[in-house]
Every structure is written in structure tokens, then in C-alpha cells.
Image (cartoon, rainbow, N blue to C red):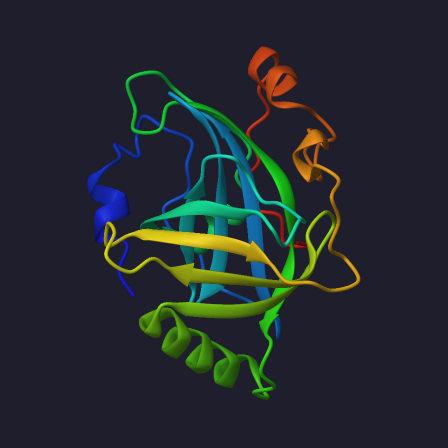
Length: 201
């Protein structure tokens, strides 16, 4: 896994975004960051092999299995990015405000044993263009799928909620606050607080 593309797009001396980090713990983490850049979107990130595999979801996640949300795969992000909440200054790539809209851990639907074995299976699914996962977040729970679109842009995927006990017609994006700071995008933009590493998380 390489962060070369991530680092090429950024001048890390000018932005508070993290540049690295090492994964810890026995579970795989995920984070969904609401990002008010040129266009508002949600960044859906899954830990795999000490980096965050990342997709930009313009409309945000949905709990309705009938919704198929476009998810554009972007460059890998460093593991520590899961703790980032704050403002990317103007003139920098992705300039705008970021909040941690949801976080937690996840696992493949298929039973696969240890964290290392889970990652091996997930990377295989990623390569095949069909990820099936179970999420344990504060907002996103239950089964989801990420499916790569054929005959489309190479990085175009769909994020789809499976029919399970957590499926709902309610619009989950109406829950607008950070699960960490309790602030909205607008509140962070007015009074930025940069989140850095937290050993307890």
C-alpha cells in the first residue's frame, strides 16, 4: 500500500491533514467524514493494511436498500486520517471543512478469522470489485456492499445497504453532527478545532 498519490496532492506543511500512522487493535476501523469542499460530499474510508481505502460519496450513505449511492474511489489516505476533523486551508487540495460524521469498526460478511485474515479477504474482494461488509458505527450499522460499476469510469462504485434489521427509509444524512465533537460543519467552520491523534481511539 502506498500513500504516494496522497502526498503528491498535498503540501503537508500548509495543511493540518495527517501524513501517516500505524494501525492498532484487533478490529478494522472505518470513518465517514462529511466534507464541505468545492462540493459537499461524504468520504467513506475503510482500514485495510494500515491505510484507509477511500471513496467520495456525493449524496452520502443511505439506509434504504433501494438507493444505490455513487461512490468514487479516490487515493488511499493515511491511517491517522480517521481522527481528522477541522479545516483544510484555502489553496490546498480539498480545501474546506471536515467533520467525523461517523466512525466505528467493520468486518467482512464472510467469516474469516483474525484481522490479518479479514484484510486478506477484503483486499481480494476489493480487487474483484465487490466488497460485502458489516458495519458497527454510531450511525451506520449492519450490512453494506460496495460494488464496482462495469463499463464506467475505473473508479466508479455503488454503495448499497443490504436488507437487514438496520435498513430504513429515514434519511440518515439529516443527522448532521460530528460523532466526536457534536458540532456541525458550519460550527466547525466558524470555530475550527483540529483533531489530532488520540491514543484512546
